[in-house]
Length: 214
Image 1 (cartoon, one colour):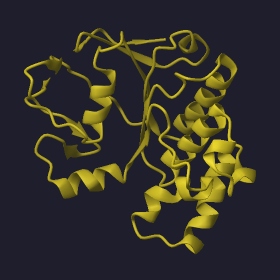
Image 2 (image 1 turned 60 degrees about the horizontal axis):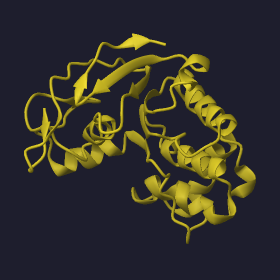
Image 3 (image 1 turned 135 degrees about the horizontal axis):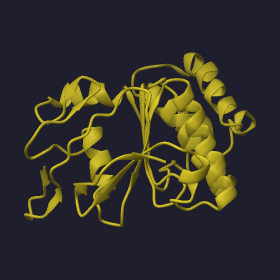
Image 4 (image 1 turned 90 degrees about the vertical axis):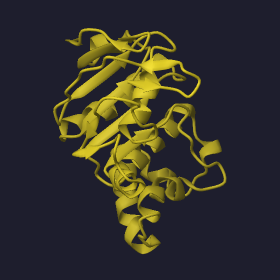
């Protein structure tokens, strides 16, 4: 259960087991608890009761150091991508490993590799404001995959994109999944589920409905 200090219950009665290598869509109405669940999965929120284990870490009882270590094994794609406009694409993508102490010489080939994966190697020294919305989201995907995490959490990564660009972004996430990465994606773009099948977990008013394959 996740209960805020105001007394509001955001999530309750969830019982889920997501095997490594799964591609999972989290769907539900606005306010259903999708973003809250993703925040809990990377330790941004702690359960107020019950158990939550992610990549071998018990979130509820984890120390701050354990949460920091867990986040090094999780790629996060935020709603709105959260790129730093005053930093180059290289600097934005390099950030997860920069904070771990990697220097620029060591980072450069790794950043080039992940930008090549998303088709943006030629924009290495560009600034986010010069990119389209779809390109910015692809930069966010490159940043999330930089450290080869076993899990990627994506919060409405296609929400502000046109249909063609959204499908391309989803193609990239599916390609990562085929390489063995677990992907959990919160989305309201239900039409994408028909062209990109995966396990669907539906939240409704903070409760988990029956999961199914799309």
